[in-house]
Picture 1 (tube, rainbow, N blue to C red):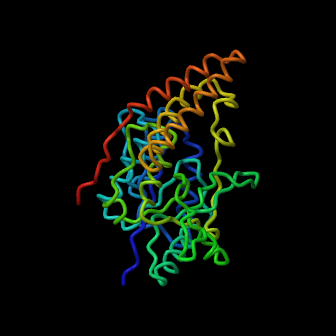
Picture 2: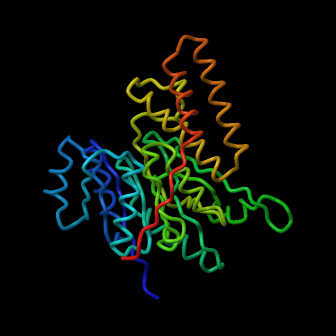
Picture 3: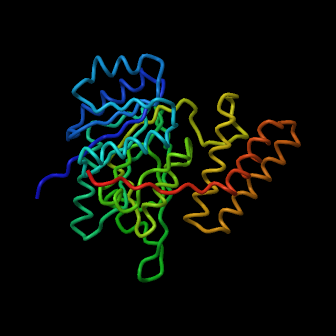
Length: 305
């Protein structure tokens, strides 16, 4: 049986220096990628020129005419890798620095699971911040075994933990999964699109966190996304997308009740922010809840090449 063709998909916007580091880590893998797709979200910081000079013939570069956010970028990137014939799609943002054996470890885990007759919804790496703290921690899958106990610990000694939700920070997806479940939702624009996509992929069975596959996430603002603690005024408006997108993800994958409870929690937080004079942040949350009530984008499927 031939080895699967693995294509890395990297989405970037105005982070030329980080992108150069990300790509340098990709080409240093002990198991080389079979191809690299870079989606340039209309950067204006010299990214396009750098890619043309240093990566011509080494990567498929798709420059979008406008910034479509991470969601639009991954929609375009998954589509491009599928059209290139990728069997496995390795998804990451431009601020992800994968360890040299990260891909090799993901593929070894896939082989080990296949030997047990298990096809994972996706595989993801263990992620740490530059100073060593765990970040982008996936959500454990708590489905039960035949005895009625949560089964998440069954492969713990081998560093394989079943998860239902993860982020686009070294996430590997099978071609067959994309063909079945469709593309990431471009209309989500930013934040929460990876949550929705991995929940969609894992509805019938879990993905797996592969502890031996490691990566560093050089985030601009470390820590959980929360508008109450958001220190950058330029990012405040993005929490409207996050609120809307998580309402959608919960409605589609956890049920209407979960979506309503989350929306109510956002309105309670908006009330607390208003009481402390943070009216603008409160307004962002209220707008996000209103958007979430009517946000219902269709899933696109990639036609066969």
